[in-house]
Every structure is written in structure tokens, then in C-alpha cells.
Length: 270
Image 1 (cartoon, rainbow, N blue to C red):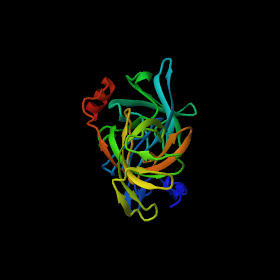
Image 2 (tube, rainbow, N blue to C red):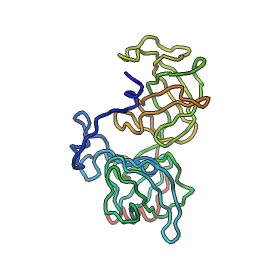
Image 3 (cartoon, one colour):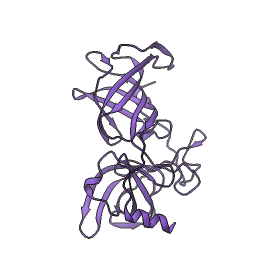
Image 4 (cartoon, rainbow, N blue to C red):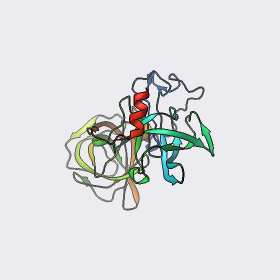
């Protein structure tokens, strides 16, 4: 498989009305996500208007006089509406979306491809960062990752990669150092078949299954469920040394996060 194929390039784009069917992949609807300027919203019920993936790549967060905090980004899939209660991961911050705008015009619904700004209530600019993910707070909201298992292909590393190696991972809009906690196995890059278990190291040209542990709070998803949050590049020495796709994620407990008063009121109304 080519590197571009591994990272999801040249994937088929489905066109037409935004429906649950249109957002299905290989016969299964993908869990709804919405990534703000950070990255996504989810809805596991797969039955409402927020079906499928909803993702807004985060570019900036602004504080606008008389309005408040406004994250800016691109909706990848799903919809974003005023009045929605969303949870930001990995911070576990829950609040209400007050309004959504595009090109200085108010929107009642933002859809995939829209570059939007949306006002969130009772949240300061300092509480939101690039790489965050937002999701429907009522339907299995996004969580931070404790660790994740990935298949990586080493492209260009001058030496060998062993357990403990800690490069920077570029995954969606997040740029966070992650430790290679365990190199579980080497595998054939074409068939995926295991060729060596528990190798001491891997080098350029090798493919492997590894466990990665982020050094800071980070939100990722498996590539199968949500490709934009499930593929990454490994950066070191000012170059891309490896690429990978996430196979599984161990999520942190998201309980105890901040819930704003606006979110509490909106939830009571519903």
C-alpha cells in the first residue's frame, strides 16, 4: 500500500444530500463527529440530523468584544447548529453553541465544507486550544486518549527506533510528543501479517504495530471510525520519519469536567 493510500489520500468522495446514508462507509454509518477548529463532534445514535462525522479543523480562537469566545474552523462532516450542547476533548469542557456564522452571515446549520466561526457561552479563549475536539455531549462525547495502538511505517530514520522513542506526532490539528511505549510486532506492510513479535527496534522500511502514549492531553480516534483523527505523521529532525494509522484507542475517564451554566440550562430545556 502506498504511503498516500495509507494516509487516506485518493479516497472516494461521496456527493449528494447530507444524509445518514451518504455518510456511511462500507455499509456502516460512521459515528457522528464535529471537530471545531480543533476537531469533532460525535453522535453514536446514528438517527438524528447530526448523523455521520462532523469535524471542524481548528485554525484559531478569537475573543470578540460584545460577543465572546469564537472558535474558527471547517466543518468536515455532520452539522453544527446554534443551541447544540457540545463537549470539548481532551479538556472535558461542556458548553452551549450560541451562534454559528460564515462570511459574517448567521447560519441555522453549518454543513461539511463550511468554514465557520461559532460563539460558545461561558468559555474563555484560554480554555480552548488547537487540537481539541468537540462532540455532542448527549451521545458518547469525545474523550482524551490515555494511549493508542497504531500501525506505523518507518520512511526515513537515520538510525533505529526502540521503546521509549518520543517524537512529535502531527495528527489532525494536534502536534504533540508521543512515546513509543511498546513495539509489539513487525508486520508485512502489504499483507499486515506478523513477521516478528516484540522486536527490539525498527528501522527505515519496516512496518510495525506499536503502542503510543501522548505526553500531553490529546484526542484521537481509530482510522476505521474517523479517518481525519486516525492518521498521523511522525516528525523528528525537521522531517517526517514515519506515518501511521490508529487501530484502537484507550480513552481516559472524562467524568468531572467543567459544565458551564449555559450548558446546564440548555440541557434542562431539552
